Length: 186
Length: 242
Image (cartoon, rainbow over all chains, first blue to last red; front, top):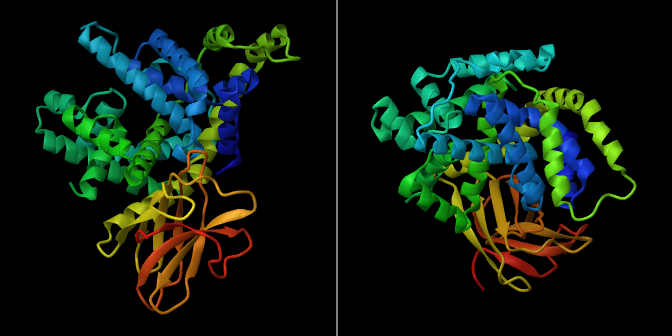
């Protein structure tokens, strides 16, 4: 475990004991991660801000449930964020509300972008090229599930493909992602 | 259903795309305590987190942090001693955005290389063990002072293995849970010490020299921290129920 993650795990332990300073520091560490995902998934800035608030209030309330052996603190928080975002997306779909879709929300919000180091940009570039090297069909199902919150059945319906085909593409995509990232970003 | 099939469902579950009856069955499987699938889901989620690295990081407005702190202040049972509210208010406003930006860069830059990669390596090693038809999957049963303890031992005669334990209280101060492989003719071989968390769960990946003979029994004993030559303490887990 690195100093960074050890420290994040320590912060969560402190938050479980209602340590406000620790919570503030944890927020500073992870809020950008959550907000970036929220914008990508929900598309609307105000919804993303609401989600960010909800996620960290949940972190405050449920910090005692976190166990370091169950994954990194970031993954735990991101899982909370994704679950809540998916609930929101599905709720919106059920209510048949319309919402703004942009091609690339990250670009749309570029005025708020964090200045990135050269190394950071290089890693992102590598990740982008890794994703780009996925077959389009595999990449599509991964993004529809991960960023748009669609279930396997919903993806099959949307793409008019057999459910088995969608499952195979998902699993192949994940495996390929593992392989690609393992070799390109070591 | 084979374990390979559960793992396949685990990948889709980690992606958040499993639905219907399959989702219910898989969640029941996790609730039943399958440590392998739980670890695999966790590892897959960590892998998928790397999708974030394709996104341009965004900084949330400081007003969101203020709102969050207002909510938790309303829920807090007791204020922190010696931390006046005005100080606590200024701190996030002045440094919040800067800290989030720095943290984003630091976490992003170090996360994969230093944290993720070692865990990923262990998780993938477990998956590779599972995929090898020569790997045995041996249940472990609590015995002696810990009858409720349970575990599983994945073992390949190449000398590689992985032990999962649950319901095993943390070892007392100065003691370890020593893991042993036992063959028919040779002395028990110490292959590592497994630690458990506050929930009684733990795991250890094992890379030991190949043995001349096949391992017949797997055992975990409670030992003094400096004694690993031969088992001397009580047996807490064994591959065959006593």
